[in-house]
Length: 459
Image (cartoon, rainbow, N blue to C red; front, top):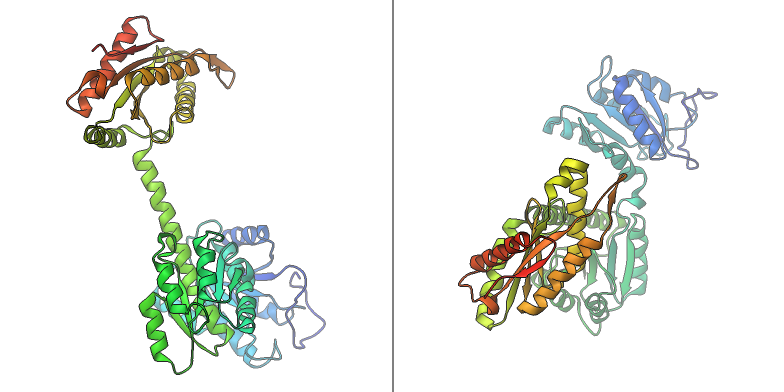
């Protein structure tokens, strides 16, 4: 469909075959082009108009109705609100559809993101308000949310717990329409075992109250005790006229409820609210993890940074003293690293540092603590490790670096490191700072002895 005139002004029906069509109405040719490219890349057919008057005039003669209209609010001749008002009037007159309630979905786009504009759009039946400037992908995501609901929650999982098979089947059918994968359980115990054994990562649970073996409130209470499901959205189901049942479910930890019998639209509305919130919370958690990683890790090497190491090393030292265990420290840096940067460039130098970070990370134990201390300096803490095994680890790292072929973008350079070693039991330092200083002193002894070697701090 490309907006070609039809044979007459008869009533039209929406096409259910082929790509879905979106009409874009915006007076900015640049904005129309940007939106059209994004929607076409997402698999939609696009018909673009300059303003609301042109769009309405063309709709009367289109062979097939569009599946959705994207309207800019601020346009000359006829703005988006006036265009939508006339569209709704034409629908009410039966010019487009046999059924009055089957209205064309409308999304508003505007730089004036105000409460009044959002409210006016809502009362005109707009399903979404997109604020300018928008990020790449926002338009396609908003349109897909309306026209392709089965992709909205793709990848998310719902657990339906009810002893009535027919109800589970009905709920499953509804949830699969918005892209959810659905798991079923006949009672609370079966559902709890499924979650506890980790057989599925569940994003939402819909739980009946009255079930054999284990009731819904018992399941919710037990599930709330598990750290991984402590914040899982859970919608309780109960029979009409049972306020005490609803109260018991909420006391157990339910986040919402539905009274049976319920309609599919109410179920989907409640489910989507909780899943959108869960997705938002998961996004926040991921952002927090990323911020934490940036705060404690060295961006280039992926090892811990100096600040994190110093704080964690204090804890390791105190723990070793309390348990009378040993703690060793390796301090090393790259020999003649300035020559690498001066000869091969700082890009190659960064490549060397990053590669050494990867070598260290691959050759220390899970409980060891490795960090980039600054520049070309690195440090490793080895809990429960004496001086002799620490020296063995140091020699292993020295050999790995010496034998590694550092080659990048046509450049190659031989790299070596000097390593200093000190330990708690071997040198009896009074503090973590002193232990670190002893390893640093041993490093300078290694450099003074000719570099590319491991030296233990003298007793």
